[in-house]
Length: 504
Image (cartoon, rainbow, N blue to C red; front, side, top):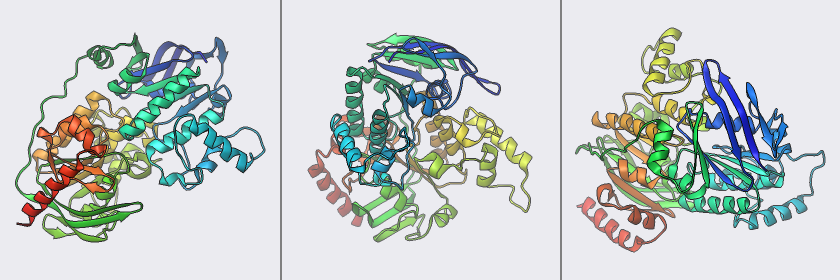
């Protein structure tokens, strides 16, 4: 299916999100859409998928003008969108999610649907159990389910919005292989991302948006510096690594044993120093999130101790960890990190450390929200609801809500959905906290991010946890091998020596 945008314009109040966009995407191609946060990428894709309508301009499919008023219209025309946060129902089984949204009034044969599901997933090397519940799946597996569902419903064009955020390298390889197969079959793939490496690997052509404008199209092979300059209007540099760790121990795990089916993480001994940044690396589902949640009282350990600034907080709840200046920012923004329906000003009111009393000073918190919007470069207003923000702006808002008086911050994918410039800026804000003595634990699927910003690294593989590795002397290749399960014999020897030294 050939997809064409003609003179697309879209306003949100005073914000001109898409400005006269003209773009033609050929059938059987994998088209990249690049741009910084707030560039208009998601807006354009939501117009194509029927979630919102343009103020002016039109969509043409195979040369014919179409009116797409809803996602149901979009799938009727053969357009399906895979969102950054999969739109599924976690309490339901895969096969029940699979048939959601099917056309027609009759419920399909359960046995026949199971057969079709298995046949469809076998084409792409997926191995999903249709009887499993969605809440047992990783993000990558939920993406696989959504792709299968859209194809089963007849999608000829697939839109993928930041699909590699929060999935493992192995799952990314499987996703890319599936997309290439679909393109070979004549499907149109639209790949929306801010990750240059992903676009360079996968896409035959890329369109770059900046501040609502289509600034150009570039065919492969790509010049990375050129793409960055088109995205931001300037060249971006990661900067130098810097270390601000001090000697004071602010956090300690002693013989920690955590069990969260199907994983067991045993005998973790570790000390975190004031101002230190610790990166947790591993394939999704290897145990990083389990350990992180046990460190803030969201999971109870089977045995062992969690010590915060000399105080035993083992088996305490999250509220007590917060009262001891420990905060946690989860990866699932709208499910756990933010409250849909509430504005930014209301979020800052809830999170406020000051102005406590019987009455809420709405004007004070509105002004505070506006100041934080400026400071964190959030594209939105104080009265904007969080669900109305782009994914990257939701992440900036969640980070802005972290209290100033924190000793330890634990984060899952802190730059999830952020473009390069925003990620660098955000790490600058986190490192400012480190200079004040705050320590950071963070999970990331981006190994370069872990190596760039960590002082030490803990590697996870099937529930095993490595001793701390010095980030400055660890290579990308070494880290990749450990995450893939290679070289662990040497790691266990290092761990025994580390624990022996810690005990003496």
